[in-house]
Length: 261
Image (cartoon, rainbow, N blue to C red; front, side, top):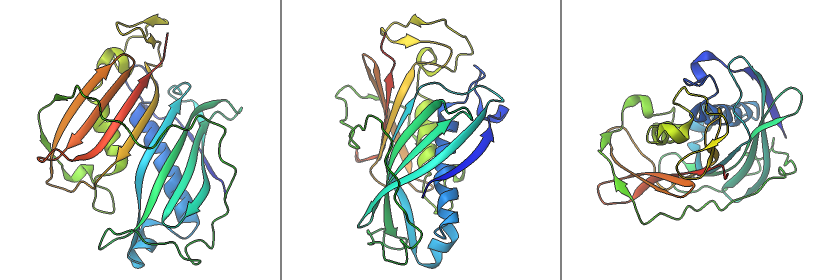
């Protein structure tokens, strides 16, 4: 069953360039998933009563253009498959006229809240689920290959503001963190509108920035007080950011793909 809600790009959701930021785009997609779960009777509070939780395993978000301040948008959540304890869902952001602005594929796991172990979805869990046709898009792998040229960055501590209602680092917070490491020249956050000129890496930069695809792979849960050891790497038109623990195990890896010239 498709779920859709309308909005308008707020000032608080835009960057210095006046367009919706990448983290705000992810927030819209996460909110759409959450609203749909509430409508289906599987919201956060209801699931806690059952000692269950949905967690995000992976995102792929493709961007045609980021909407500007004040622009009206429609956000749709489109679940297309559930098997065992895994749910697959597309997301779409479009204009009221039907122009696709950004679209996504996401993978979710249904877990026991106490143990963190996978839990098979029951007939009761699926009572409101009606699969939709999946979006016609390029589906990339959910697995991200780690680059071999990581540059270590200063560690930091997970704070209360990074957590969601489940007590874990929210999956969109990793996107917020990862975007902090993007160079201004490729993030669209410099406040300067470059007119379709290639940057030093040979990728097209315009007033909507450099990024056309983001993939995120979530490998383990982060909690308040954890120490994150970030690292970044860039090669050609791809920029990676990851957050490791002290043993070198990754909490999450985020990949930004740039527009080719």
